[in-house]
Image (cartoon, rainbow, N blue to C red; front, top):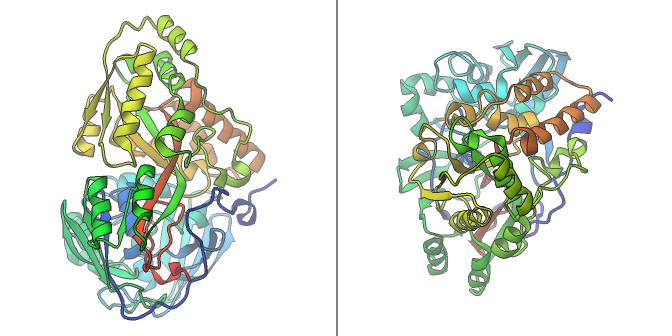
Amino acid sequence: MNMTRRNYLKVMSAIPLLGTIAPRIANAQPRTDLIIAVQDNPPQLDPLRLTTNITYRLAASIYDTLIRIDYLNGERLVPGLAESWHQVDPRTWDVVIRKGVHFHDGSVMTTEDVAFTFGPERMLTEGLPGQSISRQFFSVLEKVAAVDESTVRFVTKEADPLFEFRLSNWTSQIISKAAFQKAGNWDKWALSPVGTGPYRVAEVKAGDRIRLVAHDQYWGGQPPFSSLTFKVMPEAASRVNALAAGDAHIITEVTPDQIATIRGHGNLDVVGGPINNIRCVNYGTFGGPLKDVRIRQALNLSIDRESIAKQLFSGMVDVPRGFQWQAYGDMFVENFPMPAYDPDAAKKLLSEAAYSGAPIEYRILANYYTAELDVAQTLQQMWQAVGINVQLKVCENWGQMFAQPNYAIFDGSADMIYPDILGSLWTNYGPDGFIRFEAKSWSNAEFDEIGKKLQTLTDRTERRKLHERVLKIFNEIDPPGTVLYNTPMLYGKRGDIAWLPHRTPMMDFGPFNMPA
């Protein structure tokens, strides 16, 4: 069976979100200056420089893509900055842009801006700051050109079964060519990017706040809020206190044990739930004890994931069947085994590996992920129970997390950006992913070969077989880490704030996400 967009688009997994999804309505006046208390902010705002959850959180407010994902209606692909698009031949796509779209500086978006966004001055060129991330998502792109005032033509190196998904997601955010060139360098641009989204960047104060203000010429309608301030409050308790005191309208990274406290205030609520992101730990495999696959397998077998889900998350999260999501649709391998918990088998593997108690460093950030420190301490105890000497190290930043030589365990997560290995595991663990480029912790030749095949493979039966083989590599043959649970993303909010979370790390405050 050949792959089609109709077959590929599937409704997201059936795990219910806390809160109710309803159609959008016009926002009431006057608009609110919204304050969101967050655990951290990204150091800059260029999607070609970062793929972290906290960057994703802000991007939806600043940028738009040619194709939009309708999160309130079954994850459908619908027109965004493009009025329409069609496939000319297996390697060629023509996109007709929407007329009258304004950038944040008041200029009108043209086909030249779209072509420049994907062109060699930003993407794929050796040595550019955006090279690594653009290759994760657009290595298949050969060229892009403005055909006329309405149409942009994309040509891929080979047939790409995922091209529409690429135009709807990360690194496809359209920018102003003139503003990018005027900025003078990538670092200045990253602090004051000019996109078409419902809010424009007004202030970036490192370690403190990022403030966005409404872009009232927004093509999709008036932004519901007059401004958004993402205020950094690293401690979870401080965020809860700020919400209760009225100093914040929404807070991120609520832990399950805080839900009752928040809801104890009559005007506050908790919304959200598991998202299409898997919390995991990663392994530095190029030296030290973790070079031996048996020790990595033992680490995996020592984790009682169900206990973590039940005791630390009150059963609000579940354990995935390996590095995959139900939202893969018919690419989801439903009979793939659940991660095993077998301490005796772990001890046997350690004995076979002649492990003698050499210390293994475990690096975490403490407050980046929900209940991160609690989870890390629980894992440390589970590993020590089978005789693995894991030493916990709390890092201050990602630079310390990825410090070389990286022979450590370190916290991480994997996003499903679109429903395929190429839009999830490949972007993290592939040749241009952060595991290779920054963490420098793992590589696998067979995985790379499978990724190359998937770039152009349209036969769904064969594609599914390769998906399953990757899951086996990640689970037992050469694990780069291991799954823990499906990441929960819970938010505390005031009851009078009309906003809904999606199954992504993004926070969408635009007019397309207005609940009744």
